[in-house]
Image 1 (cartoon, rainbow, N blue to C red):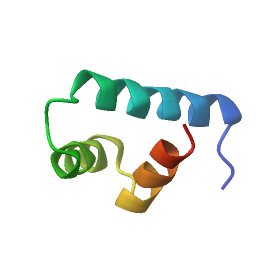
Image 2: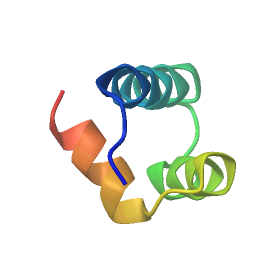
Image 3: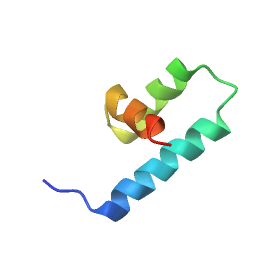
Length: 52
């Protein structure tokens, strides 16, 4: 199943904004919260953050 580029960009923006807004928390907690919210793996989240 292919995902639209628009949805991927929105997801990337959401992850970046979420990390920026919750920078007072530990990264492990932020990743756990994003995993629950977006139903994506930790690896995917770290890949999004790596490609800033």
